[in-house]
Length: 119
Image 1 (cartoon, rainbow, N blue to C red):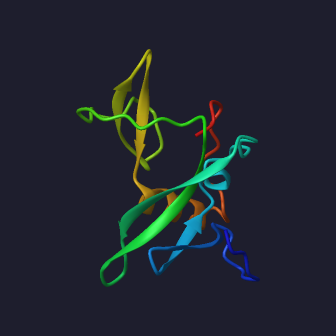
Image 2: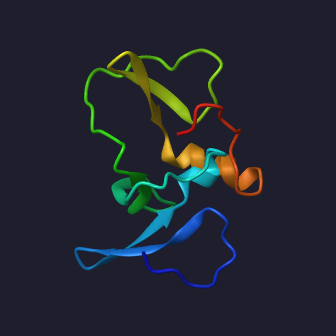
Image 3: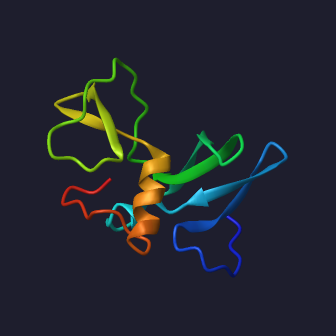
C-alpha cells in the first residue's frame, strides 16, 4: 500500500496492480469497525465511476473466505449499502454495494452507520 498526503477520509492509499494504479478504500472505517490485526490482502473489484467503470480495492484480512451462491434479499433493518446476502455456513454473508458504502461514509464524514458485529 502506497500512502500519500490527502484529505479524503475513505482513501487509505493506492496499490499498483498489473500496471494500473488502484485506489484502496478503507472499508473498516466506513463500517465503523476496527481493522483486523491479521495480515491484510486487497480485494480488487470494478466499481461504477462517474464516466466509466474503474478499478477499486478494499483491504481484507486473512480471516475472510470467498463464497458464491444465489444472492438473497438483504436481512431486515440493514443499511442501504447492504444489497443482499449469500448463505455462508451458519450465518449469511452480507453483500455490500461499494458505491453506496463509500457514499454513506462521505455523507457522514468518513463513517457509515456503525455495526456491532464488524464487517
